[in-house]
Amino acid sequence: MANAGATRYEVRGAGRAIRWFSPGINDRDHFDVTAHIIDGKALADKMRSKIAKDVADFSGDTGVTPHLAAVLVGDDPASAVYVRNKERACAKVGIQSTLHRLPAETTQAELLELIGRLNQDSSVHGILVQLPLPKQIREKTILDAVSVLKDVDAFHPENVGLIVQGRPRFLPCTPYGVQQMLIHHGVQISGSHAVVIGRSEIVGKPLANMLIQKGEAGNATVTICHSRTRDLKSITRHADILIAAIGLPRFIKADMVKPGAAVIDVGINRVEEKLVGDVDFDQVCEVAGAISPVPGGVGPMTITMLLRNTLTAATLSRKAVT
Ligand code: GUN
Image (cartoon, rainbow, N blue to C red; front, side, top):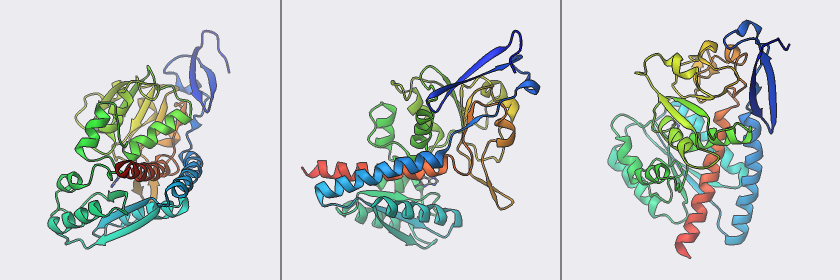
């Protein structure tokens, strides 16, 4: 496979360096490499075993079972599936969960009243309000009302501010999961150019903020791209780490990716009854050094970090009383 005058690319994967040779930077016809898979499901399973142990230790030490209250308003089928998966995951690691299911016509005042009760309930450690909410409810008003110590989504402005300042109380579940996937796969974050496509409050903005923080899980040079970015390809092609969070099925093509890059696909799109990501996996895996699949990538990690945050919230509640 080696060619005279070849360009060498290097990606660190799963604790070892993977090396290969290519005859020249954009010559993908000769690029005989298939990316390493960043297996979010396997990592999630491993991390959940550790969380289950930590939950058992916490409960043994304190006599308290960590407790997540999930709030689901309306009957969006995808949201119902996500919440059910979160409840199941809680049960498996020994976290109690209670689902508060409200009808689609629920008023903002009624939802605020429930949040107020959950804030006051000392047996509840974490509160998750599944988004999106019905149109008559202003999401920001609801998220601002969640106690900052029970805000396991890290959506409250105080918790967002703490992240920006590099002293997080909680990290938002999807960005936290993405960062853990990069770390555990051995992807070098420090000094790399990370390109985040998407500027949502849930993924793009907080993830970009986390990756610029000082430390080995950060220290990246980050570019955020979005729907108004001009000549997107010219930017993504310079990314050592490319994170797609745009919600457009198979949008990222092979010619948008730098050879050897680590590609994380945050997208979950339903296409002809199938779940696909924002990355055209079949094409991009021939160019990238490492790539996360959909399903089995970021999704299981998002739930895992919710479990971790719920345990953190339970621990914080003990600190508040002692
Ligand atoms: N809807 C889509 N993603 C999320 C998430 O991470 N948390 C909540 N609460 N709702 C969501």
